[in-house]
Length: 325
Image (cartoon, rainbow, N blue to C red; front, side):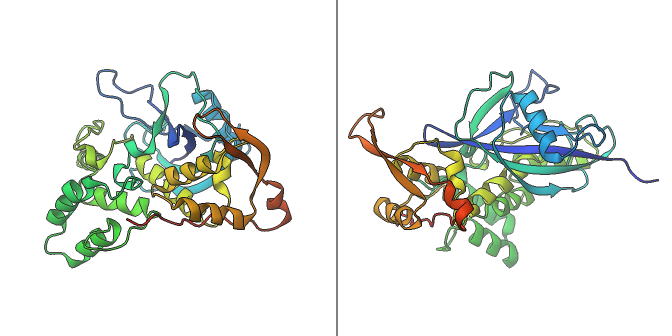
């Protein structure tokens, strides 16, 4: 007998708010109100009989679930691991196998949705070790590295993975490997979801994950933090070869706001003068001939994204001239 297959759609929706990169999260309606809120991504089923495309279905259920209209959308990945759909993300599938198609969506503003159990959450809440804007996070050396060292003891392969992914012993930091770092913590049993999922696989009750230690990030339902890590890694990579950052900016912006937006997504500090040279070389922005005096301090020139260039020629992204420690 062929197992029943249910297709679910999940959305990593990113926007900037006060210089921080945020994701739209929801709390499942069937969660226990007596337990601390464990967030999830907007998630819903695909109806092959009533919905024509995945894209249209995604936009429809996100609007109904969060009252938020999606703009830029691209498909991320298909998540089909057996058992990945439980707990709390089975979309009414019962014992069916759930295949989840993840999407990345970008919005120029983190508008309030006015929907219950919906909130914009900083991505640093889920991946605190990914934020290097103020320098190397102390939690890596104080908490994560010792925990990984205990797990990897006696295994050179594990030790090498920990060293390369978390920039230990002088190894360079690669901001794009968000998913690899999360999966290493999960494999080591340090991600809160790992204990929950292993208990479930062993026949235990599907209890929501709890925060074991703030250094390892806030848990999410099902495998939604894995999907979120995939989305953040994809976005960080695309910054460098596509002008995708402008999907997160308003119609008019200052170069300082643009730099803060790139830093918020990439999680690294950038050299101000070199960043402006990079922007000027691309020709992707042009001045509007007016100043922004609303933020206080010295007025700064306003710019706009030259969207017409995308149709005229291949448009590259922005290299990241990092500020050296």
